[in-house]
Amino acid sequence: MNYLMTNENVRVYWYDKLLAKTVLRLIPRDIHPNHLTILRVIMTPFILYYLWLENWNVVVPFFLFAALTDLFDGSLARTRKQITTWGTIADPIADKLLIASVVILFVAKEINVYFAGVIVFVEASIATMAVVRKIRGNPFISANWYGKMKMLFQVIGVSALLIARWSGVELFVPFSVGTLSIAILFALMSLYTYGL
Image (tube, helix red, strand yellow):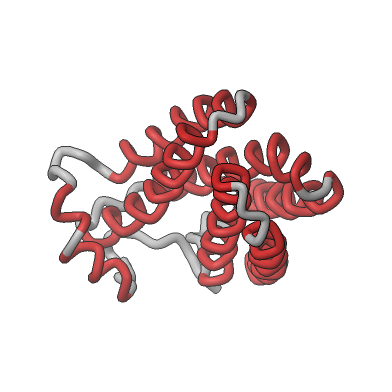
């Protein structure tokens, strides 16, 4: 069972170490992981607005940057020992808000409503499981490996679909479907292990 990661039991992953030696050094010390989580939430309506306008020149870099804040906030929290209970709860909510809203507005239209519905349903199930765990008095738990892989493949899949519309290269569409399908599998495994 994966319990809530804290600054006392923090597990630093290999990519955290790599980011700490490169990109994270550029982030000032007074920028905390929770700031990046809040930024992702704030960016989501703007991403949806430009997505609605089909302004690919804006929405593609905005989405990619918002997705990177998810990678950076977790690595910052672990490497700088700035893990907070609020961040552990808010980070997955920010992720689900970003991904689910883009899936509803964009993936449903570009690929298939039912396919998008499965993605949103599984995300909602994971969120519901977290609430049920808390109501039953169980502790919050940090994202497991399946959850991290789910988010990675969701970001790759949505990015590929956005790039397909931006560039007009249709080859990215089946790649997007494939990676989003893999993300669904990881989401189901995450849901299963989360519920144990």
